[in-house]
Length: 318
Image (cartoon, rainbow, N blue to C red; front, side, top):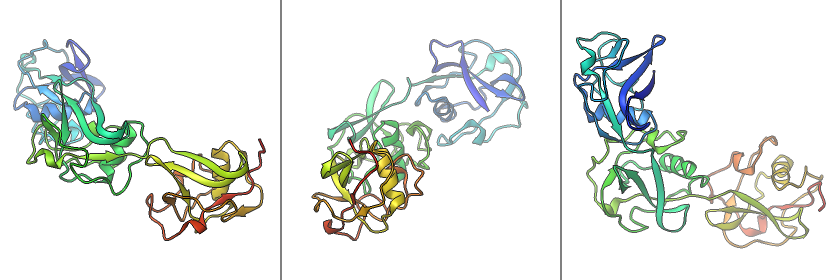
């Protein structure tokens, strides 16, 4: 079902209404509590639940009363997953319409790190910044955070808990369980806000790759050289294991250098320095970015810099 909040002071507070069977209707407050409200707020993209007022606090609705006796655990991704009476069955009046007061729209930040894409993860909730416990935290959760922050993908493995210092104030989230495809951490299952068995030495840190970039180094012109990739705050190289014209074509196109000329080289432009970021790249040739091509996790390889990929030449000479 779709949800909306009506007759409230802002978009994240009001009387809860649900779309079902072609109509908007209300939710009865029988059994309504903060666990139910947490699920609804998350589904609405409004962060966490601050209050779950009943008794038509935001006025009486009209139309059908669609849900009654909701029994959410608090970690569901939608009200549809919570036990309740069958749709439309209730013993209520509109004076029992349920309401919600959610946090303002969900916000994240990474603090105490070297830049905006690495640091201790903090979440704005209830008017305060707080931290996330590392219980159950994995690369799928980090991937959602990095994407939400516009910081590319996560570095794997991630930093140890507490690497970026211990936070202060509340520990807002624990047992986060993202699939990795969510657009916001607010959509991921988790323990109810503020419930945890953690201390600040378990505060989650995240290192994101930042904006993915390519360059050609040590070549005679901008569209020829050793291929280097910006990832995790540093430039590194690409190993030639499995490298073929389809991979090179994607790189040339991403660099704004047209397609690929026939010659694809190994280390025509010398050995690079720093990390070898990619190995066994396997593009189809149609990808918009080398970052979209299948490959082992970033930084995993069995290479040395004598195997650094070079491009000689892309079609475009500038």
